[in-house]
Image 1 (cartoon, rainbow, N blue to C red):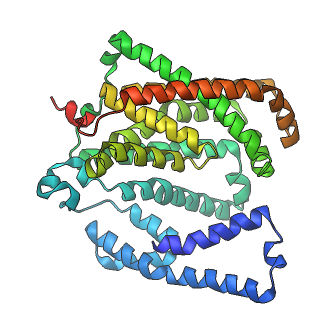
Image 2: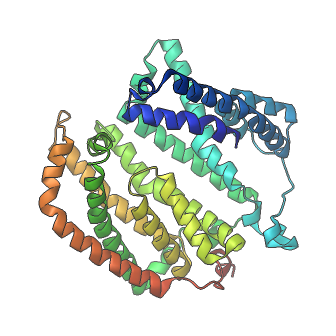
Image 3: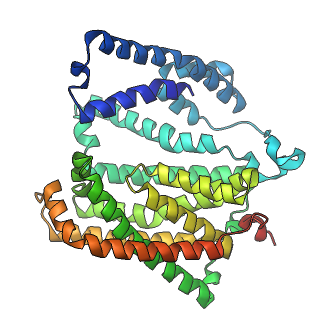
Length: 395
């Protein structure tokens, strides 16, 4: 909560200034002063809940609460506290699961802690190390951070550390990883499951290719700079970067996403609020976490993968769908890398011109694929009293 008070006003103002640099200058002097004072006031006020929360958090992990004063360093201090290994050996159950909820490993897992570690603690720590390196070596920090290959390599190490942290945390709270069905390739011996994977990949890729293209086309009239940057974004600039990026997209990302969003969050929230609510909320979080324009597509895909997990009882099925989908996209990205030079630039106007002859075709394919997806979800959506896949695999 404290970070929200501190960062949301700053981020909001930053986004406004990015799209309208003269925003503050266009305001009256008194109104501009009020906005600045309001942001500063929220920044200072945010320290109260932030420090209090940091003191409680570090005490809960088994350390003296005085370590929580690191919260005065805002998100950097919280990042340091997140790296402290936990010493606690007692867990607190959620009231919604009853008195015996302590026996559920899902209830022992701290979802906010994992999210903060993966998306705040670890990245901030790595950027701090990079910043110190730049300071010692007299290098330009912004130049390194904006390098596509650097970002790709760093992202691989971040995914590896997050995966290791999640694996150790799951083992610590008592999960049996075999019950998730992550490596249960035996299920592929059933031809129906193979056909199901192929069908889902075709549907999701067709919907992705058409629906997202239409979205991006119409968004280009509202946020042209965003679309222009998006279509010209480079994920790698040499073969080494290509290898790291491909490994991250094809292997690390699908494994982590399916284990965390479908294996953990879906089932934890389904236990707390019910299966339908668990599917909707976990899919919504899955879409938001990508921080991209295609949030509707990602929500639908997240829902499909949830249904697949309930239908088959094994995470290997949505994992393979995710891997194959990302592999197809990677092949196209590699083809674009080798077929164009580094100086090629596509303006937003050129993008619109290239899209306009295809709008009708893409609309038809998007509508058909969406209709088939809805039929699949309607016929296979789990019932409210279905057993969670993790516990179906207990035997």
